[in-house]
Amino acid sequence: MSSNQARVSRRSFLGMGVAAAGVITLTACGADSEGDGKSGPLSMTVWGGEPDRVTYQKRLDLLVKKYPELSVKLQIIPSDAYAQKVQTMIAGGTGPDIMEVAENVNAYSSKNQLLPLDDRAKAAGLDLAKSFGAVGGIYTYKNQTYAIPDRSGAMIVYYNKTLFAKAGIQPPTADWTWEDARTAFKALTVPGKQWGYAGAGWWPQWWSLAYQNGGKIIDPATGLPTVNTPEVVEALTWVGDLLTKDGVIPTKEQYADMGADVGGDQAFASGKVAVNTTGFWAIANLLKTDVDWDIAPMWRGKQQAVSAFGSGLSISRTSKSPDAAFKAIAFLTSPEAQQLIIGDGQDVPANVEVQNSDAFLKPSWVTKPVNMKAFGESSAFVYRAPFIPEWNEMQKAIDNVTANFWLGKQDAQSTLDALQKQLETIIKPAS
Image (cartoon, rainbow, N blue to C red; front, side, top):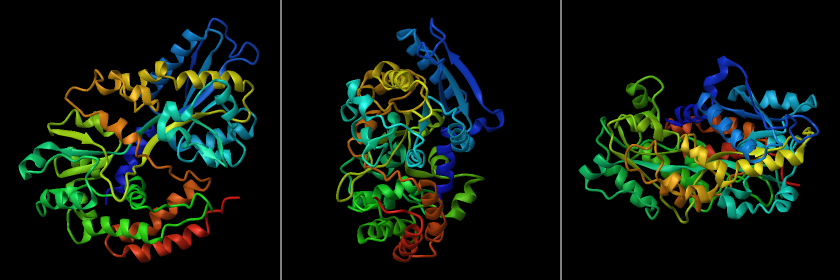
């Protein structure tokens, strides 16, 4: 299946490529070298590679231009070392003032390593729902906000326009049903040569289907896992049938035959699959190919639901200048600073005003017509994923328990029953 390759793409997108280079530190200086005039420059930690460094630095330079009294030292940390590094810093009393977080945000907040931001957001007049839409409240724990969305793009549908036209199928839309998708995938499949769909073995993919069907991975009321409910079983059965019964998804062996480390993103880029569900990061490589492609919002089940990828900016509890840090965060997540995220092709800005602007809909680096409106349209469909403190342990359990399912060796019900038992030993109920 393509789940491993999808995760590699996501981690590369988040900067694993700098592991050998170590930590990069740069400074954005104002007229006053003090971060808030009292406690020295603010520190900011993020993960990423050289393109991320360039874009973050441009945004910090813009911050200092607007607020000369601020200065920020930017520290780039390899993705695979990030969590351990920042937790060590916080434990030693030298945590960053501003800290990038993502799905494992509550691994930090549950340990009192981050400051709640609700009061500061209210005082600054920052309306999270208005500014960031469905992802505005995604970085919360026990009804408190611990990060402000910075980057956030929904999972979208990439489709091969040539293959669709050849099969006489209209492009996908948000109004497609599961049956519409399945019918199209079957028509787009040429056994052994071409496949209709790249697959859904990665959690954002099959979770989206579960939530479309009215299911949930974690019950928000109790905090308990609910992965073996009929709604989730039906969703996983549907995508499993695409693989084992319909043959519209490449098997693990068929992916291997395409080449080393080939997954959904690579197979789509080579024209071997007609539809792929993935994130913004696939665009840059696809622009270099001869494939005639475009993007669309995710199809629907009983309701609209889709996963989002992104990161937020938080303040560590050891910050000596939390007010100045929040002032910086409020600016970095404003339309003015978020324009640079898309201007450099780094990611999807979390700010919905920017997502709906010409700067996002028609970026200069996009060399062919691309329906960038798909991201803004999809933002209304984003479900609230359970970013629980046990996120990392939960993901490991999911990978281990579902492995045989994605090989076609186990059915959805027995797989999810086993996963439910495993998660019940990991996840603590909400208090």
